[in-house]
Image (cartoon, rainbow, N blue to C red; front, side, top):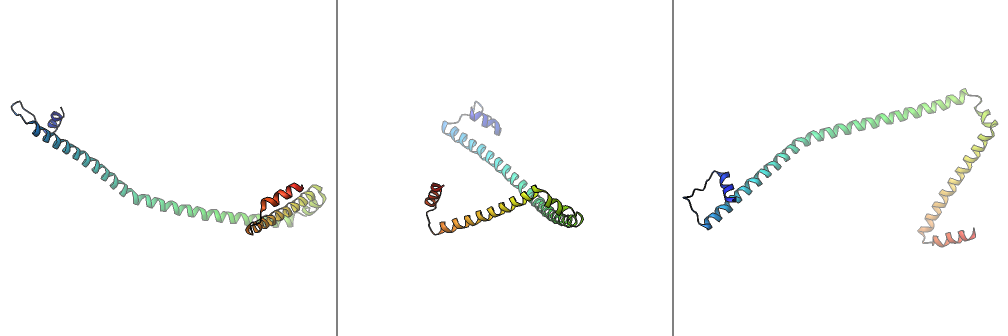
Length: 160
């Protein structure tokens, strides 16, 4: 059956008068199968080569697009930096003007007990932040000298 199929592919028809020996028939079938396999491999190879050529043609366009996008992104970053600087300048100007124009600003903060408490809490919070930063540095130094921090922590917790 395979021989008939392959024969039909190559235009050879087996007649009843032609008789081939089984060895010749096997050699012919093997050669035909190899030829078919080679053609299929060549077709696949050609398809792969075509696809590679397409990709090679697309690469320069992609590179140009990427370069253009990088340039646009950098321009946007520059614009954002300029806007940020402008906003900071406007805010500083606003603070200066509001200090000069609003004469009640200092009176309001002195008369309002809540604002005094808020200021005191802010100061205490800053002091606590400084103490925490100092503690972190002290712990780093102690850890560098090989001091057993776990035992010290357990002793302090036991005292509390």
